[in-house]
Image 1 (cartoon, rainbow, N blue to C red):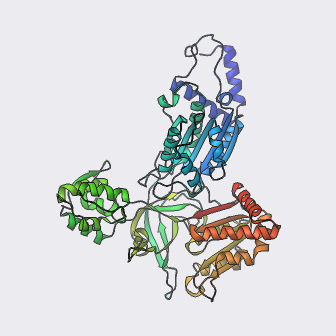
Image 2 (image 1 turned 60 degrees about the vertical axis):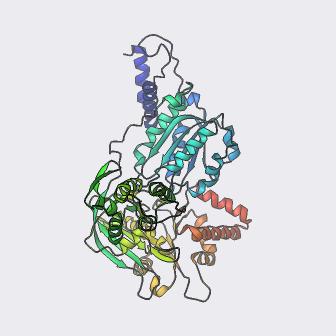
Image 3 (image 1 turned 90 degrees about the horizontal axis):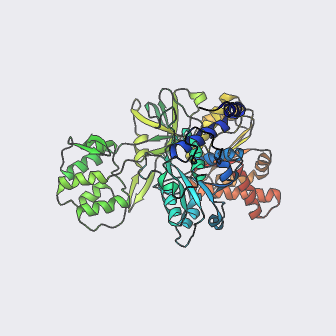
Length: 577
């Protein structure tokens, strides 16, 4: 119970505090009570002189780094910086790509927000930083740190990049003041509480506090798991004409209570092909209806092989475990389970096969840019799917998910989830937008155009699209022409590479319109790039740099700094794969 004088001070403080300040006070006091860090004499009611030091008094200078692939980690770190600056903490915010690695040994307090991509890998922008912290000669004895790892728990190596960096910082001599925290795709409801807890732990001067403390992050009211939607395929047709060398499908799925934004992706876990499942069962000589436990869930063997376990293109780490069970020497290479069972048969077939099932990893979800608009399409969600073909040795294979989706019949029931992309969102309605999306890279821009049309956005829209032939590969041609006629699209440039002797790509069309494009940039336009990371996105950025250099009469290096400034301002955004 507070004495009257303290009660008046407390009431006045609460009344005059902003929302952010109230959130901070709640987190800080909760941290003190949870961790038992109240100073002696303050744990009981009494008249001891106040001696609690606030987080902002102890942590007077903080470095916030982010390593982002789609922009989610950057978005989180940027919000963190806004909060810490309001609390009086001198904050340096930087991407690990731009950060001077020589400064790391000089830092005292560091918070890192890092995402994971692919098979447990760091974002491409973080590779240099990731490799640097693996250098055994790096000494970080002065550093106190915390790592917030963002990921998708549907993938086998959940938040692995964050796990690796957290461990390496400790091995380099840094003190982990904040226990590693992994967050799933529903991270938004957790981040504010994590920051409050992290600042409380960084301000705790207790020796070895990090080893004893466990970060307690209140769960958001909405729950802690991403929502799984039950959908029905209502449309599935090929966008390419009959003489095209490509096959790209427009797929519409109907579902209730959809919640997504333009720029987000749809995640789906494809089933394994039935012939592959049947061949595995035959080679293993096992009862398909036998019940087994796998990753804390019960399945029949057939059910597990059909919809849960990865059977194709097994990663090398799984192949090595199979080799141990089989007792055979197997090269470090990706192989299917069928090939392993056929070429390197198990000695005790059924008994060993049950062990093999336990080392199999879940089928990883595939992400597809959403090509519909929540404002324009209601209870429908659309995706644009190209057939993925590649060679394994001399044999041509098709991607598991694209192969499934291209042939999925109308009325098929399927499950999916929404993967938010905070770093690829539309600007305010009055801002101009330049969109560069060859091939299926046009998908989110179809969403953008329908959304801006439905919202009556005042900003101008310019689309650069490219593919092989205008007659057979002009995806969404009718819609694009309609957007031009109605004025939703202010400008359109198409690059059809095979329709003339010398191939023409979107970057060539950009150079042709360099003066106008630069005028849009100078007027505050936002520029978006979507599609293949290599070589398209690199070629497009090079073309942008050359246009800036020409129009401003700068060197290529100086023009690159202009482009970097656009990225930092959030006006150059990429969704590449």
